[in-house]
Image (cartoon, rainbow, N blue to C red; front, side, top):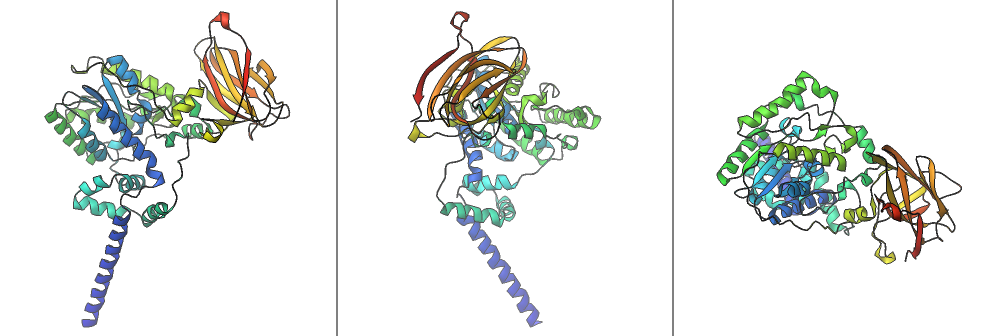
Length: 485
């Protein structure tokens, strides 16, 4: 008996030592930033800053990443004359976390628009690996503010690999995040908007993601059993005491035929009913917010710039007559943002890549270069037009060898033929392109020996499609050359 008691005591002591060691390891890396949490941290920090900087009464759109991608808060601000902030963040963040962080930036007379994805009401998943990584890396204060039960749950869910990753990265030199990817866009406009879903970033990887986007199969499971409805009820009660109005709207999502099935229709209709049961008006038709696949960027909730515009116009239509009187000084923040993404869009815009153009990179101050992209011997761009018209293509490129040709074709018809400068010298070309209604393909060839859409042939520092000048000024011109460094 004594031997068994000693054995149990030893086991208990061993468990307590292991638990103490685990807690010590956890707390020793609490607040150590990780690379993977960088994007979410910038997302949350800058959007909350945008809300704090808004003047007068404001509209705040709360959502996961569908709000981040699909809402143009600047357009809403301009159209309504009311400061609007896009507080769309990331679906890895639990609803409770999002609502807790919204409270300090809301004031009497503000209006909250809830555009929450359906998954928030079909699943109670809170402690995802990505959220735990972000929370203990970037928001240790929020962790410390949690109750004992929740802290124990978090400490118990985090993996050893994650704890060791934070330690390992803390000992390594900090590298700059890889640039010009929609998920490494760390800069948001003063309205909380992102521009990283512009068509120029819609590369093959993103298009493949869009092509493989899945139905939201959890919609039929939506019910009042999910804990998020209780969290939302608490938030609604708090808003009422603070004089903050709440309106719910359907999120933008990709259209699938299966959503017409009765079980999906019941799930979607349950959202309207459950919001109403909690005193929140639900405006708009969810089926109007289901957009065609080509209006999306890479997932079933992430629209590209065209889908973003369409959904924002839907929001404006739904909000007509729904907003209370709001105090505003009519002043809006400056929209110029000095970010890598906006630097790209100043020089690369107006088209969608098909093939032959590599990922944007830079800046390279030692060569006096900002955003650049390598092009293959042949690259193709897509431009969609709603009517026959002309566009001015401005191209600034340096070849990898002397005397490389330059041919520009529109829908297989040659529009321009010439040559680039010597190797490492940039040539700036301006060409007026005739484009037809519908889809157009612009082909740019910089080699006489190959039409390969892989490899590198020229470095582009500008590839800009803009409205053509007045007809009397239409011309094709080769402008003076500039050296790369």
